[in-house]
Image (cartoon, rainbow over all chains, first blue to last red; front, side, top):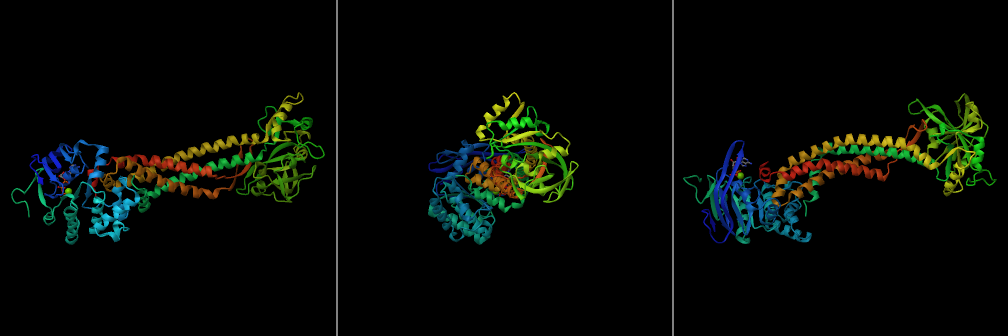
Length: 241
Length: 390
Ligand SMILES: Nc1ncnc2c1ncn2[C@@H]1O[C@H](COP(=O)(O)OP(=O)(O)OP(=O)(O)O)[C@@H](O)[C@H]1O
Ligand SMILES: [Mg+2]
């Protein structure tokens, strides 16, 4: 279940209401998001599309509690994310959000294993349990033989698979992927998208993904478009390619 | 759990050139700091080793050092009669009436003259100060213009070898022996017969500046002091020899320490700026990494801890380097003016574990001060915009 009209429905995991985000650059105000509504049920795979600068990254940052909106509310499950601040938000991110970035954002001086282990350092898991979880996540991404490799020893596609393993290892409520294939060739991109869609179909994960690429968006169950600061089901006019 | 320390250690190692300025700054500061303190410690140890707690030095009341004191032979006899004075098998008191003059001798190192303390002693002095041993040649014969030379004096000043004629005070002396006084101030001195020295300097033969006695035990000191100060025939002050020499070291030791702290403070400020600079650039260069860690759920406190730890790691490296560099000066002998006696005194640098510990603590302090502000900046980075940086 995915809706953008703001009508109250049952069963939404993520509920966004009247979200505004305004950036101020000097005296100029940029209204990036205006009155944005979104409902996403658990287990959905949603793709966000829209031209550069339309606010896709801004929306993901707000959903992930990395930034605060100018107005409006975001609820995830029982938590009102927009009412939290500082420490609580940091703790909430650790428990509920898995991030996947376009540039992978792995820590270059840590091995694949250590990168994936990072989110587990914030849990109470024992060393042995952490090892088990990391190995599971990496083998799910087909990287069992690359655990001791450093990011610079991996291809772009492999780096992104490590990043996905890191995003899922602590079993978050949902994944936020910002152009996860933006820096990859077609073949690696398809591999990554296949893995993400398997997380949804086989492991019941909820994924929200930003992409420029219509072929990448095809992997999602639902494609939404950002236009004039709000989400629409299908682009007005003929914006799509 | 916190951000793993290996993250910081490896990040520093990966960009080690960026940390070099901070490491060298801290190393230099720690090196100078420890060197100065070990100099003070060595000076102090040399003078402390000179005095024995079982010996007492008797001077005229009110005289600050031996040079300004007068004790005549009659007084020496009275002092020697005190019950607390140890005696030889023949019953002679172990007392050494002493006079001190200062004579110039050229330093081997620079060729310039230094003031050397020449001590006229009584023939029984080796029993009064049993830590002093003749290591080469023999002791002087009383009544002759013969010298025994302290082991440091022989090394540091020219023309004091065994058998060599030495001119000072209008007399020609002969070096007949070399003694080892266990690294004490006496090692920088020349010893001869007190009466001969008085004659040479045309002074009354039976006038001394001080008398040093060997006590029956170090516990006997208080009784000895009371006996002498209450004796109407004497107006003397009595000090434990150990306390007398420890006090002598105070001025110079304090001077070196104060100087050491001042120099270390100035250098330390420079080193802290080096550390600040290194850490600010580390934070700037790794802002996307920091934002990623924050996105993963590490709190701002973790980030502060992590970057302070990184700065402490750099400081640790600097501190260890500084200590290693300064370690070889341990035992290196140098000389300085003893401001109490205006004579040259040889002493060895003493790099003790305690001083190395102080150096490491100082290094870590510099790391802490230099790391705190950059760490706070790291924790305050706006996550969303830092993530956009490439
Ligand atoms: N910190 C900021 N201060 C001011 N303006 C900002 C800031 N961050 C983003 N913007 C502006 O907000 C708008 C939306 O940016 P955003 O990054 O969300 O777009 P996007 O849809 O992700 O674009 P792209 O496809 O290029 O990644 C842009 O016009 C951008 O310049
Ligand atoms: Mg973007």
